[in-house]
Amino acid sequence: MTKLSIIIPTYNCANYISEAIDSILSQSFKDYEIIVVDDGSTDNTKDALSHYIEKRLIKYIYQGNQGPGAARNTGINQTQGKYICFLDSDDVLMENSLLKRVDFLEKHSDLDMVFSDYVYETDNTKNNRLQELNFVNSIQSAIQLKEDGRLIFNSKFYREYLRFTIWPIWTGTVMLKKALVREIGLFRTDTSIAEDVDFFIRIIKKYKIGFIDDALSCYKRIRSTLTKNYEQYIVGGVTLRIAILKE
Image (cartoon, helix red, strand yellow):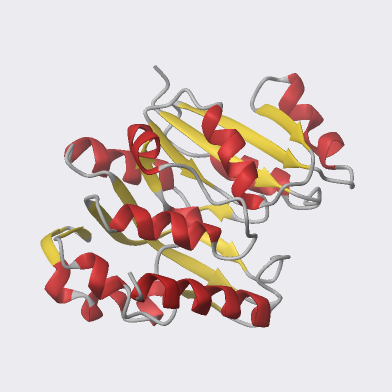
């Protein structure tokens, strides 16, 4: 069995997707498959991927435009790996990102999902996002185990997590057990805003989560097409938060 399946949803990102894939191919951990789900691109995305397709470095799937949740779900349904992780087509992995996350899950078999800090890059700045949010210090009561920059959370994590005004878990740092998806279900497809937030909230409410206090991916805000519309993104996040707190 393949150890890891990496899902890259993409839409009109021909200028950046090669960099995303190359950041995977350069990883020290090699037991993976890359599944690229082209969600109805109208640019030259497939041409940009032709080299990777011809060399069978990726599995390429094209579908009509349905949004990021549906694209990730299509990828999930094609996975062969024990673990699943995600990378958006305009972002990149940092060195040893896959190895560090796989090692954590392998060492602590009771963990269902791990995530990490990440580099948040804008036009003018670049910083470690969760370090900037003071994440670890703000969530001390939810820490069950802490060793060598790796944390395992206790049952208080869910409620502590909801206190953050900016959601700490970013899709590009997550790695989870495939078996978990069969239990928790797939991403929502009725919205293109905060569908990933909803997915992770469902997970952390019921399952055991780990955190690596190291930036293992880079979110290139300068390239993002969805979250450039801050008003839409914030309204979507607030709506979801209200719905969760009413539960």
